[in-house]
Length: 196
Image (cartoon, rainbow, N blue to C red):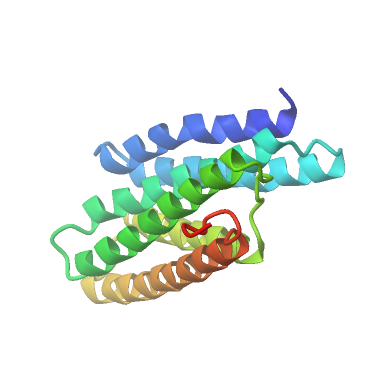
């Protein structure tokens, strides 16, 4: 197994640890989850660069890398539902998480259909990469905001403004989810036509 694929598997292994640190209440747990998420996100950037630079791109990597991203980001969104429970933002986070999960299940299913129909594994396109980057940035900023609160006291008004900004960023990533999912479906239309 090459190094990029090892990094991808490392990201998958880190995902449940990251989610546990988000949800289990211990001192500075948001800071710990922030660090784990940043490190895991960096493996996504590094494995792709290594694969392209040293010609280590494999079908296994093309399939597993986006799957690892999906696991990491959806774990974060599920954690945010718990974090925002009881606040006025819970409706937004629930809707956004539904969009993210719907898109990820749909794209993963289409990938399996394409491969089982003899097609090639379709790598992430520009919209898919933009979606992943926007998700990772918004998740990092949200975790950073909660991490800051572990060290200093923020007024309720200031933190409310921060949450409004975060929800807007989450909605931007949700819109990119819809666009990237639609472009993926269009690109796979020859393999998913039910009337063929």
